[in-house]
Amino acid sequence: IPNGYIRFNKSTEATTNGNGYFVVAPGAWGEAIECQYLPSINLQARSQGEATTSHAYTVYVEQMVKLPSEVVKLYDRDNNEIGQFSVRSYEQLDAVCQTKIVL
Image 1 (cartoon, rainbow, N blue to C red):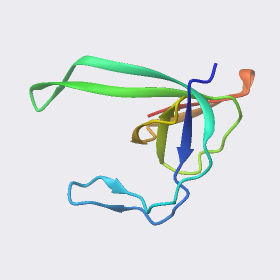
Image 2 (image 1 turned 90 degrees about the vertical axis):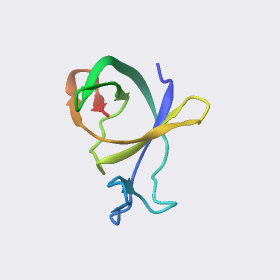
Image 3 (image 1 turned 180 degrees about the horizontal axis):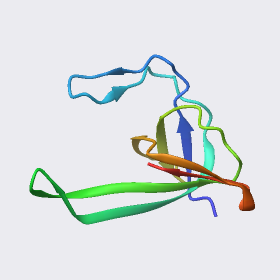
């Protein structure tokens, strides 16, 4: 059951900002594709000995998608942007004709 949308970066010219994060040129995003996303929150994550909250999303797309980029934007069903994420992994699920993307 779709509960959001995913858009892939279609620009080949991503640069990094002063903090080392990727910055994509405006208008460089592809068409919105319906998806189902599931959040995963780790409240026990640690970074440099300090407690932190780790967020991840598992996204299922109802079609077989070749990964066009390593950077995506995730939106909820009301088209509100959840965030811009790097793709951690992706897998073609042939038995159910879906693509699983971990952000």
